[in-house]
Image 1 (cartoon, rainbow, N blue to C red):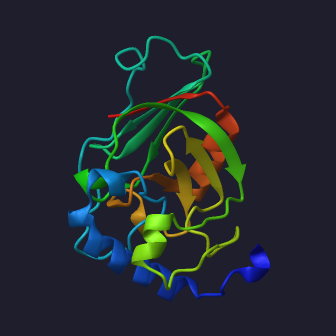
Image 2 (tube, rainbow, N blue to C red):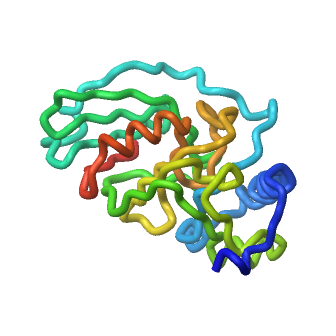
Image 3 (cartoon, rainbow, N blue to C red):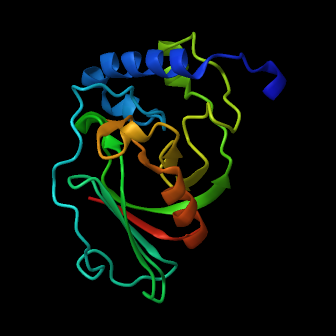
Length: 200
């Protein structure tokens, strides 16, 4: 499969991806939401960084327990909170979040798969809109998922890293939650399949 992948430079690919994603964002409908992607939009000065409060939280208002660990993503403050099952470990990470309400999904889900060195393929809807995009991007510095990914039970939704650190703290994704690579690596090691996830 990798041998059939078209080679494409990271900068032109991501730049084109961002421009295309931004042009389609206002037109997203419920059906398109099901085909949202983990790719994040290109960053410009027009996309401000987070200025909301960034503070530690207690798990109790959000979960009845911390069985298998618990992840809370606060889309307003653009922060991810993690509690280990025995509550001995708590982490707070800055994130990127979806760039529009149309691309935003809230509610309860869970981690169903953990991947180190993720690869990426566009969804069918993305490929129809952008036939010039590569069919496949292997793991590595050109991959938009960074170094690690936590797949959620919602199709196409992930918590993942990013090689473009400018995206963190901004509304820049098409549905997924992005972290610095060093943070997703730590979260990956702390998280198990079955971990509870709540996006608010």
